[in-house]
Image (cartoon, rainbow, N blue to C red; front, side, top):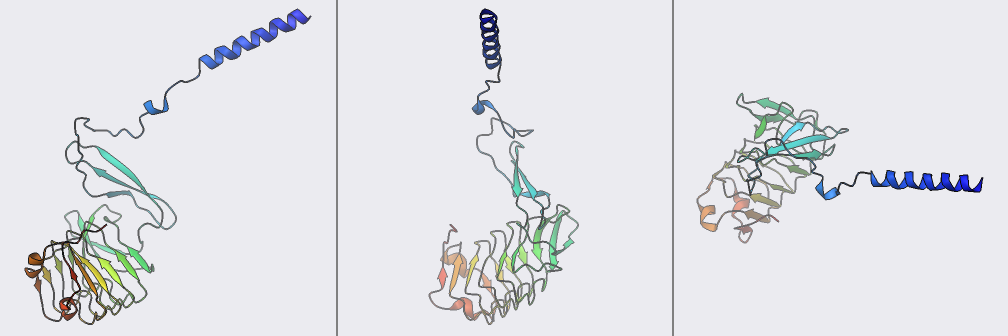
Length: 244
């Protein structure tokens, strides 16, 4: 009986060794995760466009971004945490794959983050007249890189706004764009800026820093209309600014 038990034990051990030898020995480093269709491995340095929203995030559900290399077609994906972008904003289509923000709509965020595209996939390129007029409880706005223009009165009378970064592609801010933003003390302006409308920063008396991406000579070439005395204070202009 003892010999029989010994034979059975030896047989069981052999089976265990055989099972171990047949397990998956794939090196984790050899596993390719997220290989993208259309990728050209000869593309040494990818040139990605801006992120497009594939699945729009809401306050309760995650979304997804994608961007594609203009050279080889490689696509990257990025998860967007729920709540990352403000919802309830009202957009109006320009009919060419772009759209503008028309008004705040039902959005009640005090920190508004504007997405680069609307739910239809159109790029957000403009903020229309008085879109955020008298959003008196909003403390900050995050503007998308896709933006190119800010129309008249867009952020006027946003009394609690303290600072804002204007994206690199924006060349125009309309009349009274930030009129009566009483607490606005700092703004980042891009080198692309060409025109600042009448009374754009009128009554922004707390303005203490203008961070400008261009040179001092570039600044002098900007058309700054009258009613923008806060922009002309001595010692507040910082040129050649690079955002960290």
